Length: 388
Image (cartoon, rainbow, N blue to C red; front, side, top):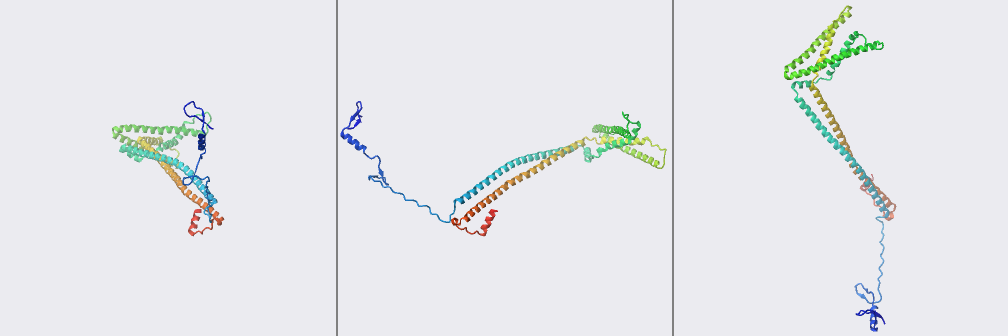
């Protein structure tokens, strides 16, 4: 007898099964839990199961000679790793050269701009000087074409030296300079020369300053009456000419006196007009220097010339630096291009070295690899070229 849960109405609980119900329940539970199917999907009713044992797979046949071995593959992998290292090194070199090339190109651009600026400045200075010369009067342009030489500017200094030599002995008549010690002959001579030099300096350069002021006055009058300017120019020139004549006469008198002394004369006199003529000539020359060299246009033209020279020097310096930097950039570019050739040659050498190692392995085991076919002349040349 079997108890089962009552599923009909009521209060639930367990009930007893009848013998028929119990038999049906046992037959139902005794059924198979799974079933076997064949290759066609049909249920197999037989109690025995057929199992097919797979046939063993035959290993691949090894034939000689071999094409590759682990040793050869290792050699080739080593060669590929070396080639990769070579390429990496050249990439680093290219990176450094490209960075340096960028810096050098920046400097080249800087000097190119500097050259362009200095060239424009030079053109502006040339135009300014041409405009200045064009704005001058014809008379001034003629004076500028003559361009007093540097030697002329030393004439007042020569006059100062000559006058000092003439007057140094004459000023010795005033006696020695009172000093707190007993002067020697050398000290006395130095004081006489110093006294004469100071007086001569005041005379020569004072007259030169007077000539410059006279020129300024004449220029103001020239703007109103051109004839006054011409008369003043001629008067200064005539003054120097007369002074030169008096100097020649004084020189002749000095020479005559010297000849008489050499002939044995003892009672000779040299008039003071001789020394006066010499000093007057020196003064007239100093006046003429101050008058004729006082040309403001000459100074302005000289200033324009100096600015043009400075601009020319700056342009030449910038142009030279640009050409030098351009050469540096071209050299760096050539180095960058040569890296490609060096990398190609080094990779070819590495490939040739790898092939030599592989061939050495082949030659060391002819049983596995078989004899190597003989190289032709063209093949041997190619191998030697790759090795070199």
